[in-house]
Length: 157
Length: 157
Image (tube, rainbow over all chains, first blue to last red; front, side, top):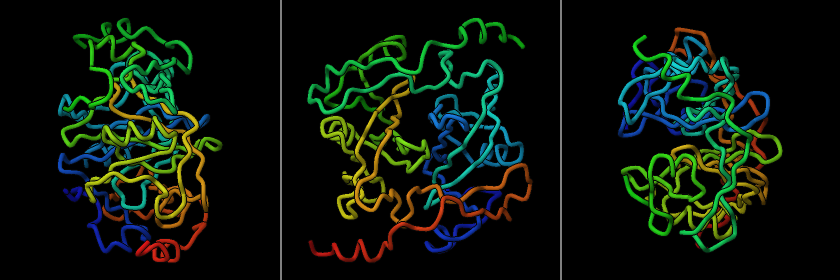
C-alpha cells in the first residue's frame, strides 16, 4: 500500500470512513480503480486506473486523467480521440481506495477506444453453468465513431 | 496475467473485443474489478474484486460473489448482513478485464458495511489545487441500518 503524495495522510479507520479529508489508498502498484458513469443516464462508461498524479490532475482540472497499467504512463482521456471526460461529480468510497466519476463526454461522445459510447457493450448470460460456452449479447448500440480514422489521423502529432 | 479457469480461452485481440465468448482477464493477483450499480437509479453502489470462482458463482447463481483481497477469500455479498445483491444484468468491457453488475439489494437495502446504501457517500471537491486540504461533502443520505447491530448479532453463527 502507498499513501498518495500530495493528499492528506491516512488517519484512523474512523477518519477514513467518516471524515471529510480525502486520503486515498493506492494499491501495491500505486493505483486505485476509477469508474466513470454517464452523468445523464447512469450507464457505466469505463473502468480505469488512477495514480496520485492522475487523481491530482483530475481534481485540479475537472477533466479525467488516468494511469495506464499496460503503457505505464499517465494519460488524459481524450488526448488523442477528443473524447475528453468532463467531470460533473467525483466521489470516493468507504475505505477511499476507489473513485466514482460522473462525467459528460466531449468530442464524438464515445468513451471506448472501439468507438462505442461505453466500454461495457456485451451482456454476460446469467444462471447458467456452461461457463466455457457463454455467448454474450451486444448491447448499447453500434459504435459512434470509427476508431482507426480517429487514432491514425493523430499519428505524428 | 491469469486466464480464468472454467471460462473460454483468450483469443485474438479481435476475438476479445468483438467476439461473443466470455474470456475474462485476471490481473497478477488473480482478480478483476467489479462495479455494482443500482439497477433502478444507476448509482454506483460498490467496487470490489472477483476471482475466477467469484465470477463463476455470480454467473451460476445470479447473486454477486466477490473475492476479498484483504481477507484473501471468497465472499458472497450479504452472507452476514442479508444485503444480498441480486444481479439483474452483467456486462464485461472491451478487453474483458472488468465487469459491471446492475443489481437490486435485498435485506435492509444497503451495499456498504457502514450501513449506507452506496459505499460512495462522499463528494470530492473539484477544480482546486489544495489537495492536502480537500474537504469532502456527505451525499446520498444517512445510513439505512446500524452496522454493529447487524454484524455483531451474526457472531458465532
